[in-house]
Length: 255
Image (cartoon, rainbow, N blue to C red; front, side, top):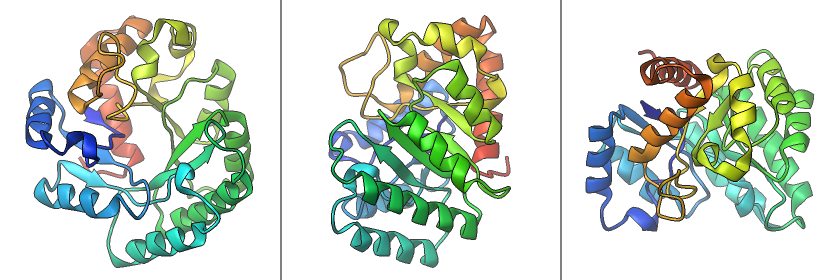
């Protein structure tokens, strides 16, 4: 399995990151992708990547919750890093109307700038879109080109929204929310084309059932994979094989 989205470089893993990674390997994970947040997360993310090369893979971008009045300064730092070395993707980037709507215009501007970089560097984008899924799909439709792809992470939308994402040539990230009884994903996931699905934990957030409310970690992705397999009524091995292939394609990983 591959965890396509985990923030395992954060403070929540400071005391037991080695044990966390050991549990991930024991659970069958072969790779973990680490989306950046902002300038404060870069050093710890790159240190973890350096300590675990080819296993913990960094991406570079600016999270929408870190987009404030001075977001240009943050973007200069992202741009500088993108010019200095390879990253697997641009992100985590996107829009967020959950916490604060006052910087939406800046979020949209930051989104468009980062999409431009993704096109220039021919890298996928990792999209965060909490309480803003339709608006963000609209944005991607407006900016779409043949060389733009990526993933809508932490998907909890409708079949119609999933189909719009597929039409764009983008992937759908399924995580812990997929296991929540009140999320209604049992009605949605079976209608999503499995060739468009990647698995994620979003660690340390959104731990799957039966660990809901606890710190999430990459090893829990097996619980997500099993629930997705149950929804599709397919063998777990088939879901794992397909989602690994999808993730490799998304991140242009030559397996």
